[in-house]
Length: 199
Ligand code: GRF
Image (cartoon, rainbow, N blue to C red):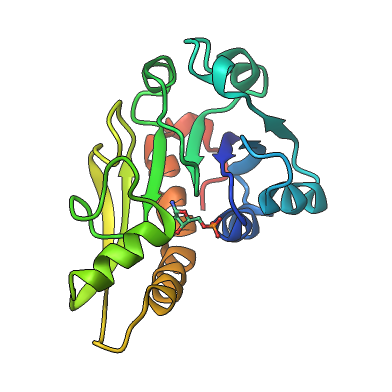
């Protein structure tokens, strides 16, 4: 069984879709929700689903230990970032090489980097009168929104679109694709003898 920790600090709509997708998966389990915001919606979802949570603190996260002990204790094999805003410290990137995946709500390399998250991304897209936007799922390295792209999907925009409607279009794409891409990446990375029940 491959174990995934979801790092999320927002409403958790992506986390909910991912949890749904893997609920009765024979080879992949969501075993931990990591969150830096007490009170975040994603924590309610975790509680309802009976998934353990870990609330992290900034100082410890960036100290170098990066909660590696806790992740190892839970047997975490992959980390999925779904609305997690802190940069991943190098200790964590090195401990999980090619095994940390992020979703960004735009077509990277456009509209990425520090400060480009959530509504700021969609506001910038509308401001620039883009005719399309989309999602990027990528591996995480030591730079913001920089690692190798795994998957992108586009959606057309019209002049009437607002940051709110763009956000809705992007969320729809995220919910549709993110769980399936995570599944493909995890299964592709797992040695065959680890997956006796592979579908
Ligand atoms: C998503 O749009 C994701 O791309 C971004 O943060 C948002 C999280 O939304 N990184 P939710 O908490 O999953 O609803």
